[in-house]
Image (spheres, rainbow, N blue to C red):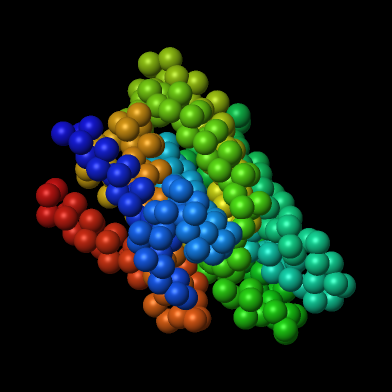
Length: 328
């Protein structure tokens, strides 16, 4: 039964990609999408391959990455309210992006803005600061980690607001990015997030047994011979790197990394050997659909994708919480 569900999710993802490619400013017939993707002889080939397909693929990659990191972080910290932005990555990335907009506006440094260099740099800096602040006598207590993440997030969020007060011309663009956007994605933005997510997923699958043990309690895991601190630092670091690569390209997209693991656990259980892969597939489906809605609901304008994920994710999370209470 579990294998059938897994195959169904994988097939659903493939179908979702093809369907979402057909939607946009102009609806492309499903048959033409199939011909363009698999035969590459459609008259719509340029639009599909150069505009729509990169965006849809990036949405799948971003959704898969956020959901995977969220599922692993929740298991590692044994906290259902944890998301991929635990270590302050989103606030650091937000500050970096707003700062880059300011540098563009004030000094004309377009290279920094185009490459999203500052966004990535400050997201990694925020994660590093959180880890350093949370360390106590060679260990990283869960409570200290969460509190440090909150403090770092407040610090960078305040700095972001300060810089935005100085901005004038680009403040609308900043707001759009802060709620996530996949507009203008090309193939060149895809390799780094894709490779980082593949590497993170493979490493987590290799550590699945240790993650299962830690999710039952750190003391129990230590008795079982798991080097808990080494696993935690490795996962925190790599997970933050994956999140940083996504945020620097797509902006801050909420709820995907929080809600998806809860949905997947209800269908597939808590075993990380299954949870990691199915979270990636489900997160890819969710964000792919959300991005399609974001670019089609009020076309030709676009809604920031974080708004769509919030409208979908919040009710889903509420339903899951109510069902959990009733079953408990």
